[in-house]
Amino acid sequence: MKYNALKGMQDIFSPDIYIWQKVEEVAKDVFSAYGFQELRAPIIESTDIFVRSIGETTDIVEKEMYTFSDKAGRHITLRPEGTAPIVRCYVENHLYNLPSPQKFFYSGPMFRYERPQAGRFRQFFQIGAEAFGVGDPKIDAEILSMLRLFFERLGLKGLNFEVNSIGCEKCRPDYKNALLDFFSVRIDGLCPDCKRRFDYNPLRILDCKVDTCIKLREGAPSVTDFLCSECKKHFNTLLSLLNLLNVPYVVNSDMVRGLDYYTRTTFEVTTKDLGAQNAVAAGGRYDRLVEDFGGPPTPAIGFAIGMERITTLLKSSSNQKIPIPKVFIAAIGAPAEKEGLVIADRLRDKGIWVEVGYTGNSLKSQLRRADRLSSAYVLIIGDDEISSGKLKWKRLSDGSQGEIAFTEVYDFFK
Ligand code: ATP
Ligand code: MG
Image (tube, rainbow, N blue to C red; front, side, top):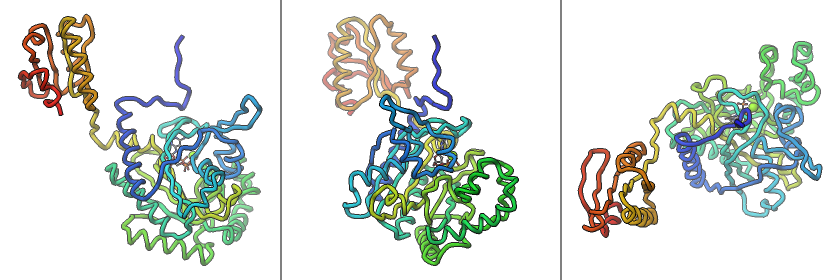
């Protein structure tokens, strides 16, 4: 019997896993400096949570969710994104009673039933962050600056920061009407999904990936022309703060994002180095969502980074360092093997990576394994070494060698 991973699912192991770990480490370091604390929410939630927040006429909810019934008949969904579960957690645990802003980051797998292709998987990983309780555009700027620092620390260059404002519940209706006017004379050419979106949420037509819809929306009214005075002020302040913090950005007034919960600021970080799947991170404000989930009015903003796309960029841009064992202990004969095992354990206790040879392997085959592992040092123990109390060491990088007493081994590698 031969088994394969499910379509669109990936195993991640050496050497790639070291890039993944590096990205997670950098994220944790950078986000901590901005006061974000890790939050681990469950991977499955009630389906409602996603339908309500992401929106019924979005691609995610219409086509992409892994939804099933559990044994008690509950409607459950494998999370397609990380914001809604955190908002659920924030409201459920009354975290709004704590001083604002409350800032969280998360990392983990997300699930979307999409057509698998380069940069697009059915299980994919995101690292994301959410900040609750502050409407001031200063925090929008901090979030974008934090993202900029994250990419800088990873050594990723040439990324574009695209920003936009999609308004609030006050100005959105005017824009919606303008879109309805624009599309009402073009409705026959829209895809079946967009025909439905026309009735429920015309903004979604702007995010459709079907070629004919992309063509048809050329010349559509731009959301930035419809912002109310507060939204305009919010957006302009954000842009001036981005200038102050030297976050390079372009305003992309066509960007509406694929989820319904956004208000005001939206942004995407894109690259030209990944072909069609060009977004490596995306986010925005969602000032209504906490209230929609039964909490008090609480402005909020967040983003998510696509791990697969980042690691792909890093694989092609950096020469990767793969960890190697520090010491390989080759032993010949039963007493030497025992001694070697004890020495190995003591070194490991100090955090040193040690490999040992196994019973029945010749010295030659043990040395070959040390070589294949690129171990920094080899220690050789046999009957002679046991009786003299000294063992031979060899450094594989330059072939230098010598002898040390058993009792000095720990100091030697410290
Ligand atoms: P896209 O337009 O590429 O479908 P999206 O708008 O659906 O992206 P978001 O929901 O904003 O994506 O998720 C944030 C980031 O997560 C994306 O910018 C991308 O890097 C990553 N991402 C989204 N869907 C996938 C996927 N199916 N496979 C791998 N990464 C993904
Ligand atoms: Mg998508």
